[in-house]
Image (cartoon, rainbow, N blue to C red; front, side, top):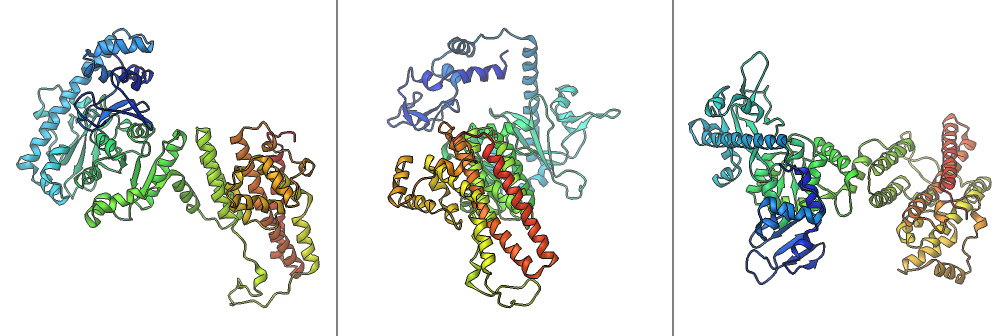
Length: 616
């Protein structure tokens, strides 16, 4: 008996397009290959081969399979002959038969027989006299007879021993192992599902491997509304998606896979014509289920409730997916209006309203930013620093270095725009709201020459010059970064005039190299920064041999400091001026708080300018 793990390894070692290409003329179409289907006559190609997902599919006749299926269905080999031929090509040894594995396979086959018999019995009960309450409930949900048959709805009588009697041909231990009966020490076993509308949970081949049951009696408030089978040799709820065997073919045609919260939502969507929906089974979306989704489409859509529980589910999905992200593979999240489930939305506004909602689903990055930004108070600088720390902790969880770098850039850009918005020019008005309650305070006299001098010295100190020169040199060395940081630079007051020329170049939509930028500065009477200007700051992005991705990341962090500093220094100058004017305790505490922030800022700058340093 060959293990599923060994067969999966065999499939991954075979390039499917190369295998099929030996007998079919394939034409590349993006990430896939196309051809006229070898299983039926056609004039235009509808047969596709996807190496990444490891399957072929014909949209005309429905032929579908992997490398082994190709060898059996197209080449006419028996299963073991196909496996042996592919294993020889892949350089793998076919394992010797394992008696224990064979026994386990035989046991699984027997449990499949049990589940099939239970499903037939549940369906018969629904159609009989005792199933009237279940049929009435299905009518209230608007499910027609075709939908009921398609999804295999059934009914479990509200009795403790009726299933055992109906499946008497199977031994009691097998019914218990299949999850249909419950064994309790010191008591007789009893049926797990009683007085419930039943729905089979099926594997990718459409075989019943578990059941879900919805309670019908309204007076049983102590019983769970929905009850699923426990994990069994056939069923692992963390590795199973409800309705995947039906949704996968539909997703290949629509290019979309929708994940909803429960199996009744799946049925409701299918009844409305949206057949590419699946659902987890009583758990948050697991890593294994995300991988199952990615085998079908690159960016499945999670359709979640718009309430607080839905927001928590969204963040659970985000944190599960971040370490797994890889190029072109992610999740999108659609939020339902609060108080509505997919069935409610379809009934009130029609299927097109749900399709529109799915089309407007947010990216994983957007959800992460909004949830962290709005999830806690951001009234103080410490709160805002906490937001940044949480965002960067999420970024650190991403295993793919390229994706992590791109997430870091985008989130830092959003954080900078949020935490350091442009300050209004207070000189335009001599009036400002008073905190205490009166509408306006008396006009304030303009700042004294001494105060303006302090502010000017704070914004023109040697440290500021050095940082500006270093960032300027970094942008000249990595000119593709200019456009990405143009907005942040444009909002920053009192910058070195050479930054303005770089932004002009960016506005002119030029594609420039470092040498051209130096020439343009010279033409306007400006020179590029001399290394002596930033000799005390040895940033990694100044190294000619620096890795481009790491250099861009370091440059982004240095520029963030450059943008933050004038805001901090201006606030410190204002606080100092207020303290000198009224000598109040409040003004002194504000000045001291900002002084501590300035010291912390200087510490961060020193740390960044010496970590992974390059000698200029």
